[in-house]
Image (cartoon, rainbow, N blue to C red; front, side):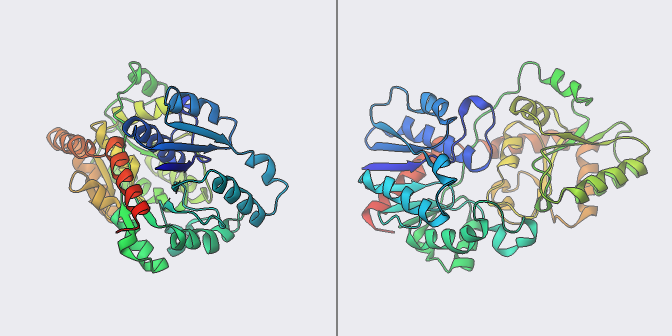
Length: 392
């Protein structure tokens, strides 16, 4: 097969940051090329930073070609629909047996055999969690591009059964065309100076709860802040235990900032701390040295952060909604995201019992090891073959 992959969303591997769709695209392509020496790959890039990605992923692979799309420059001059026409024509010229669009959408006018990965459909059921019209045609994308992509693709990849159910419910997609392919997680080791990195944030290893993610409504951070403050006031936590929140400020972060401020007033000192955006190495250090990772998100299409925390041997408290239960599969303490008392009690238990924390960490490591990028690549190759054969 001659397989094209739209790599315009890929993140430069040397940047140290692997988040969201860019994370998925980078590691999927990397492991596909390591695994598959039979098929030919054409990778499409349009970012200046893609040069580093091409060097790391493509170097020395005879079955791989790269194509540069000057899309960012053209986007400023082309109407939205015309940009889709242009990209479709670029892909069509390569005479691909199959095109994989890993970032939720296909070009509107592409007619060739295709596979699309749909990561998350929360915006359809809960638009209040997201900004309205955004630069670049967000509303056009959600109303037209994504639904058309789901309809046009021969196969649709979903990272979880939860997302598959959403595809069927929202778009009435044929479930026989949808393949559940979980994402992977790289095995990470904390940096040798992890304790020093944690100390620079004013934290003591093993004595803080941690959340990592963008400060935005669907992450449901205030619920965890309220639960931590009440648990501390009840004396259920060590007197110097801290709740650290790492992540960039996002849309509607105001209620989160307010919850943190009010919690610290009640506690009489700064025991809930906003660390801001942290580097990749700092994130791994913070995760590895935390007593517990707290992830009260209202909705996740996959829930990669809990897999990352489990693989690092950190107990996890997470929501019992969306895809998280199927990802955790009994290896995390699951609580309804609106049940602040439940989160509070889970914090009490994990801080109060070394035996419980050790057991939870061990179970998490075993579960996390099942999510590898090699497995993701193998399952994705199977989807490609089904798409070309036109068989379910």
